[in-house]
Length: 527
Image (cartoon, rainbow, N blue to C red):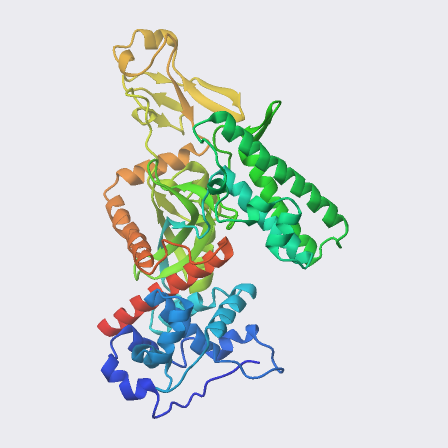
């Protein structure tokens, strides 16, 4: 049952007695001043039964505790202790000095309910509502948003193929043992999987010359045979379970992870199983967190985990929307969703959107154009291995002509089948052969061809904007999202606190809320 705090403030509450001592201008003092407006108990009514049960700990107080936990980057146990003993936390929470406001389990259950009830964005939305109450996001204002992404290192352990298979086998055994009402160790040994339930490392237990390829191969084949035998046992067990039941679902999920590891990392050869050459697309890298992926932020920067995407108001620097995507997803995957979410959360129309080169491909521009949104992003550079790139040619899409650096003009437009119909301007081989700039333009004996991109008009307009003096203002505005990402990383966003993309999204939402609230606290003090 929903528990509510009294709107009447007590004389012995910490914010009344020690507010000046802690500092009204601090973030703790700011949270104390917002009590009753920020995180009202009724905002979380969906999490509680309307009539039954004892009144809960005030959800508004617990929401404030989650904000403080993120601000201080502490564990659940530390957060519980600080709420009990730390004067600054007591001021921010508005509780009396001898109060023990909540147990660790209470904080954990509140967080779990926010995630399960799909109310994880409530605290983040409250940070934007607080900004509205202080005069930001007026409806007549049009937003200029900047978008960017950053990597989040996953919580799950990343292991090699041997240990991935071992972890997958162990996960299935744990569920089978639980459903059989037995302890994992005795059950695993009884079924012939003793090496997986004993010790801490599968590879550490075996006496093997790891420099000998035949010994490594033989060991791998034993593991694969164990995995195959276990999956067959799962099929038998599932045959006796009710389809779609909890027991059937959890067993199917665990077996699915093991099957996926086998499929992506193991090649079945006539002479036995072997590790597959290369990296499988969308490779699962951790059994503990199957949603983690290999990702790259650049050619030299690789990570294992997820990507977070942020939208930031470039005028006031508030984060207006966030998303979490797979680590190997393109940066622009959630771009349009961020813009739509920003409009919904702020109640303001978006006028312009700024992105870096990762948002500058033709498909993304087309999607924004069809949605009625103006996207300004740098166009990926064209290269031609030291020779004239496509951008050295003047394309007139109205007259459908192409002019080369030597001044030759062609109207010859040819279409070839390459997945979709791809068109290109073709210069005659004879003209190119006699050209004095040939060595700087083309190899071989043919004529130069200039391909027309399906979104060529949009890309040409983007290059024109990019070359104009106004683009410097765009670059300056786009830096705001980089600053906001840096602030989120200060708050601990680089490392995931939880397993899975859903819980990681909760972490991102909470971190963005704290970034917004600390920014608002500073703006209010300056104002």
